[in-house]
Image 1 (tube, protein in one colour):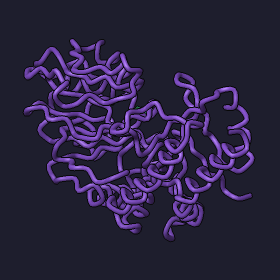
Image 2: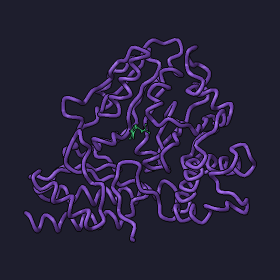
Image 3: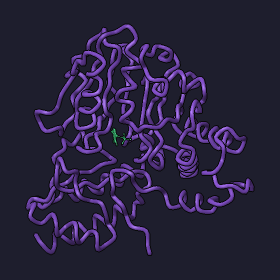
Image 4: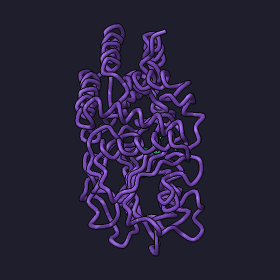
Length: 360
Ligand SMILES: *Cc1c(COP(=O)(O)O)cnc(C)c1O
């Protein structure tokens, strides 16, 4: 059976070449006579796999040496608690920018540990915009500023990196990491669950400035303590070995394709094609302000929502799957991460035009 074009927000498609490589190496990794899944995380084979993945990620993202890269578990959602537990230090409050469902979850969790100052909130327009720099009400005494660079559910993406006047900036990049080049040095910490643009679920990547380590709260669980994971090269306990290996294959795939500049070029073209068919008639619509439109998650609506079910059924027949919008916003959502081939977007655009032609 042909592989489907899977527009899921996550777990999402992986590059076919990566899955094929994993298949070739499944029973016998590099003459070891073992599957990667069966290897001790402390053995020399697995250690080489882990180190290569980190080296390639550092190269692809241009991560400076004074940042640690941690390969953790627990999803981005665990970071919502780990961040205040590790980074408040002697401060009592942190700034959060609220741009959608994932920011809200991060805020709710942070409130268990500190005073949260909402630096901006776009709920009054249904989370369809990003606040401008001038609209951010930042507290110069905050422990850090947290924002969600790309809101996976609303399809809202920042078109700039907030300027915080020296307060450490933390970004949830779960659904936009590796989609385009980014200046890591502007951030104190970046984190991302793997299952959108990195690899299989089970792995969470944290990229953190060394100066932020060692300030964890007294009651911070050991497994949430960044300094412990950094000191142990993310092997304080058994890491998600297979997901880490798969992420490494994805980083190699990105390098082979020309790195993040090349990813950005294709991603921009894919997103432009979709938004242009959405904007070219009144049949389709996008609720998101033009400057805030995500390259990775493209929500869209039909002017007549009674046609949603027929639209989705026809798409599924053509192998275009998981296009139903998140239950909180309805309509459709096409997630078009790095691994979604441009032909997948072309097929969706052709189907959208055909469906409009038949119904409109
Ligand atoms: C998916 C997602 C999360 C949650 O990730 P888990 O790994 O499921 O905990 C958090 N933030 C953003 C922006 C996401 O897209």
